[in-house]
Image 1 (cartoon, rainbow, N blue to C red):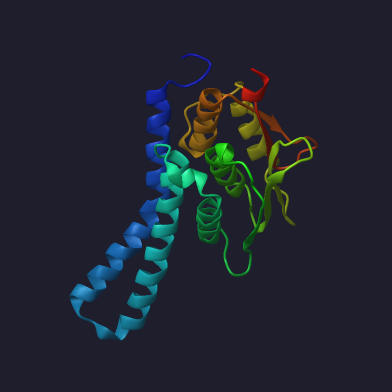
Image 2 (cartoon, rainbow, N blue to C red):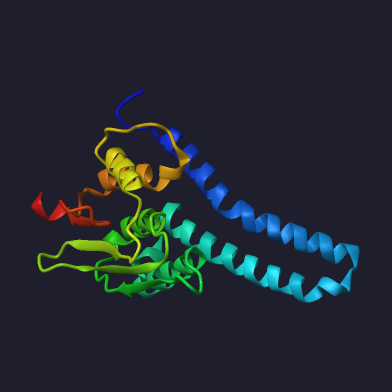
Length: 211
């Protein structure tokens, strides 16, 4: 296999990962419908709660996945919609006790898809919530970083770094957003830098202005 997966292999990874991320809530909806068909009204309140929660999670995640992995479209230029979509997705990751807060200050829509993918990668590493910041530094580079009370797994961070640097090309669906991000960066002519000192974050800078 070459240093990086082919487009077809990345597509397989993405399909596997997205299916994994929605199957649990689809199963919950199916179970709730089955209870409704049995006609036992003793569980009606529980059924309503399951359907409400699961449908909200599915809707938020599918909206996020459509922007992050779908064809480029005008919605990526609508930064307010990008922010709303990220907030909705993060609510499906955290919980009431350990929410993931968002500070969104992106001003350049050419980075929207890269930011969405970076958010997904970082969210995978947040163990007990935290805060996620998306903004621009003094030199105009986009920064996506996180702060959390419980440090992310050093092993997981090392695995992500290995995929980004090409040291690890093992086809693991867990890292589908990382492989897809690398492919997108190349096509978009955007450089990616990792924050140092074990921090959880990415820095993106376009090379187009230098051509």
